[in-house]
Length: 198
Image 1: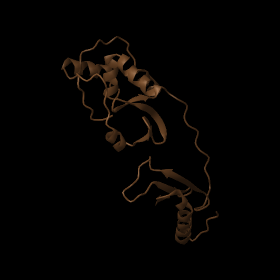
Image 2: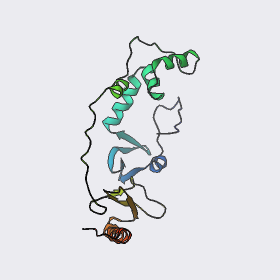
Image 3: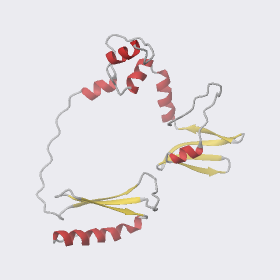
Image 4: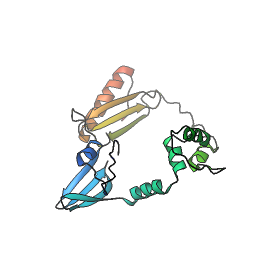
């Protein structure tokens, strides 16, 4: 959640349904029940409770929130400042830009340690001696559940393995994929004066 308001006297968290919709969440109402999802992933459900829906989200979300609450203040500020070193955090605390906290000598952040670990180099991929139009990669994707002003919900890509040149077409529905494949085929065969074997 972004730009939230904190009111000490309110003992429960209130969430705006319209704000969640703007952030890509989807609500399904069934009698006195509400189901919340995002990008086809179930987030939680709630039941009518005196004119408001009482929401129960996934255990995963609760564990993240609880972990943040239990975690000590040094780790929280270390994460907020994008894993800056502890010396910088101490200097920020000394000039009253962050709260004061106790720094245990030898403190280490597991994320920082993992990111600095060495690993075996990746093996170079075998070179493929292909001509243009010999191998085409394609993918049909949804736009993260969003719909453009023109009603576009999907896009399809065609990438030539040899040239790495990418064509992107916007689709309102998935059934237009064959039409755009034929359009792509005609376009590249004209430009490259070659033949696409489909």
